[in-house]
Amino acid sequence: MTNLLMARMFTHERKKSEHNAEGNLRTTLYDLLSISLRFELDRVTKEVVTHIDDGADDTDPAMKICLGLAHDSLRHWIPPAYNALIERSYFLTRDEIIRLGAGRTAIVGEMRESYKRGEFQTYAWDRDLPSKLELEVPPDFYSA
View 1: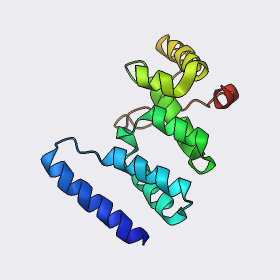
View 2: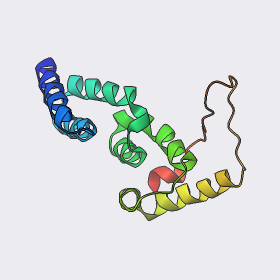
View 3: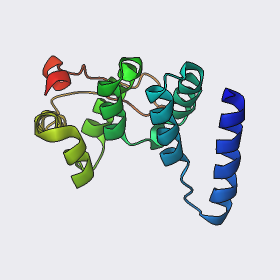
């Protein structure tokens, strides 16, 4: 059943993206993830999470934080998404602020200011690799 469901979803999305340059695979994956979590379809959840993790660079960090806060099995998404919000060149969008709430938005804003002032350093041991910020998520971020 899992393989059939996944195959149909990806076939549908592949056909859809042929007509629409941007496609809508990310939204479909999150919809499928929501359904699989709600109905406790562990195999489907595992496959969808693996697929999202493989394409993590283009996934909305605020959405990953919200999903990680809502589901213990997705908690591993929070630290990289938190760091991505701090490190990126633009601030939170209106939708992200609404999703994260005032407390988390304030924490991200404070950390972004510290990062922009150069209070944190990123290390890239190999100059060919981009440096990545790896800050610990403050405990109050989880409860804000």
